[in-house]
Image (cartoon, rainbow, N blue to C red; front, side):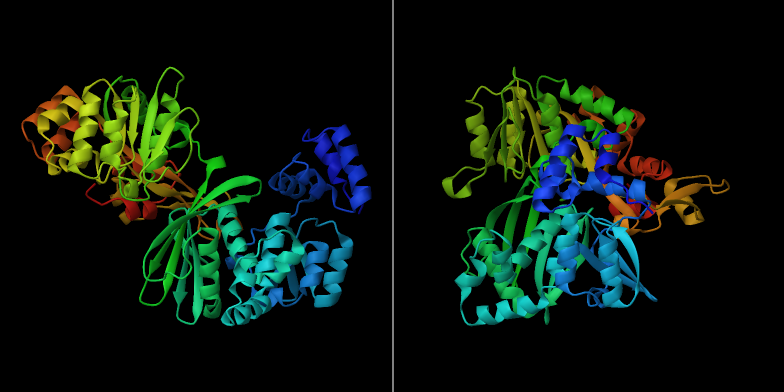
Length: 558
């Protein structure tokens, strides 16, 4: 079969011009690199685009090289130098077949050589070159890691953890450096929100939080643990000798040409130090209201709240429920050259153009309360307070909203109505609440069904009860079967479920009368408020998520 010319197809599909292709072909003659690799280096296409085009024209499946998809017995079949030479990675054995991740499945020489070495039939799958390189470095590095730990045990710390990666020779000479970078880069590519590194008996365990759920990424010898923790501390400008107290720091890296901010937190435990890193991808953060998962009715209320020139808007929910994303979405919608917008955050997670952002600095005496007082002398139109934690902050935020400013903030409460009770618990007078509060958004995050393995099934009686559906009627729901694209979880990505309440005159009257939560909730329901549970049920029936996810983040009584 004649080999398909990838460059010609990219021109045919309109991704590059003929002139760009000819320049790339000239470079190919000089360097010997593959045409796809050259086009990616020039920024003309992405690795993902190349993979998608190859999949379409060659009719070859893709593979996501996650740890759950890789089998050690397959890796042992092919030596590292062969993998690096041909840009391939063996990841699975099925009877007499060896499954091979390849950048170019048309590379017959690579397939023939791997077949000869392994003695097995080869089943090619497509993966990006970055995934293949990363898998090679992680899965073939155990011997190098042991050597590095032996050096570390001899106190030769500087040669192991301070060496900077500048090229292939440095990478090979510093396996601990390589391993730490591989962990960080892998977390970014798998869209993890957090990295957990912890001591677990004789092993070091690395877990990623993906779509809100912790998943094991890798395990290696516990001998590497102290070296890896020390390397992370060096990168985050922390004290590597301090193991008795928690420390916080930041690491800045560029991964796949994107600036990534890692927020590092160390915590002493009874076993050893544990490290957690929050992964902040600034290039992919900005999100419009249309991507939040709001229903049409909720968007209408959301827009009305933001049209107010002054007042207090609260976003509530547990930790990790997406409150910051919603606040930033609001700021993005409100951002205008005619408005002076100030924020005080702990910490500033993403930098927004056109907005003046300040960060808490307790050592210098800058907290939410003192920042708010200073803001009022800065001629603000809109103020965002990262979190209302106490009476003093709540009172100043409310008074700011009463003096002609729109104030946005978050609060720890489970429901929209619960936010009112939380303010009362902070000893805020009811007349101040009714005079300032204009709306509350309560939210959670649920995992979305993977679109690549989504399938129908007949709902059980129990599921119908949870959804409030007629038990005598037939109901078809959806779930994810589990595939390579979703790491066999059946879920890919997350979306919000919401309840939004606009503080109307009827609700203000109830607050003034010190009505309890149930009375206010009943009135809100009369006025048409949809609860978080109702929004989740709608998204289950619409095929966006599952009953299991709905039950994971909501109470039956919600």
